[in-house]
Image (tube, rainbow, N blue to C red; front, top):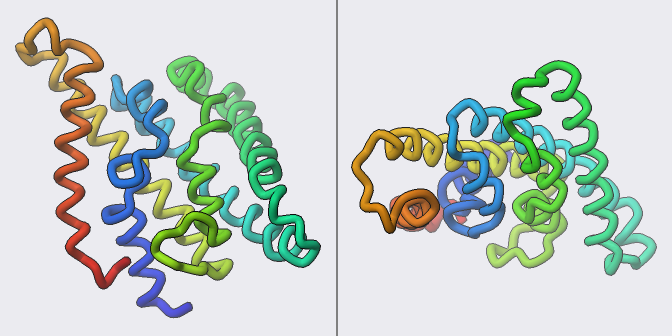
Length: 202
């Protein structure tokens, strides 16, 4: 896989096939942690780490164990176990080194285990449910994991910045809280839809 392909994967993962704004995966932490910019950045870093390492480990397990022994039907269970182990590692690290961020993330940190965006990138790297028809190599899977995490973080940080501004704005009472957040997310998704014109990057 050459540099051009890696650049295509990178741009595609961040903008064209953004897990939150294009594939609509990982919406629970997206809305739950995007109230404050600091929490959004912390969650984004955790997701990037988990996505990257999960992409590496799940690709290796899929290629070296699941496919050779024809037990591909165990992918979902195995991938969830890998992701859960990584999230536990992140949770222990944050609890020890950054208790403030650990408290700020709250219930949403363990929810990374069931974050469908992370499961989505693992399955995508394995060639499952991939409407683009891609078949990633090991390096491609790592790049896709990192860039998908960056795309998730970008959407999260943008949303957090907008929601912090909305706290100071005059919002009609029926739209306060989640309703205006849903509308904002929809407008962001429409904005990112403009990148879908870059068909050569799919």
